[in-house]
Length: 188
Image 1 (cartoon, rainbow, N blue to C red):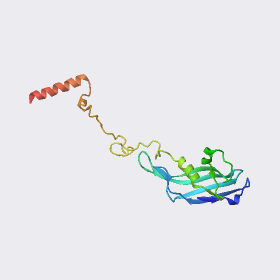
Image 2 (tube, rainbow, N blue to C red):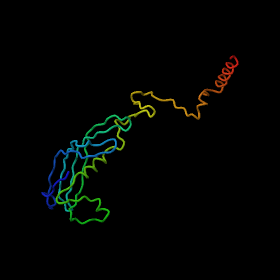
Image 3 (tube, helix red, strand yellow):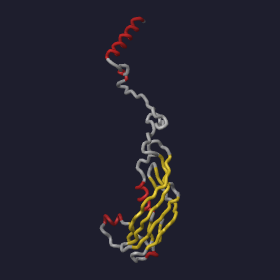
Image 4 (spheres, one colour):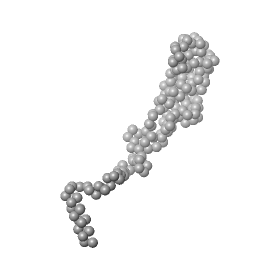
């Protein structure tokens, strides 16, 4: 997504706008959610010449697709993303080695919009996308959607406590159960 800015020259205040639809590049997202490769990105940008370079600002509307991180239900929506970046002229004075690496440059009157859009879009995506804030997810034992079976649960007994599983209730109940067991054994 390269844009030629030669027409802006180096006259501060010179400006033009861009309203275009461009295809999304590859790997425009994170593991569970992102912008599908080749899908339509709507750009509404303004290019303005300033003393240091060209200021690019505006919005990008991207189609976001993915799946819920809790229940794996498909998620689809359009997202507006704000874009703002200053591209420095090739011969502009650098502000130090650390900042020079972070500065975007105009190379041969062309600026590359892809890294700027990637930074804006990917950082706006949710790290753990959910279909709804109150999504209950899947049962970790069997994979059933908990929303479809609200009372769903599994009785999990730690094998170290399995011998004590029958000793529920009061002490009197436990004594009565023991005497019934011993009576049954005597009769047999």
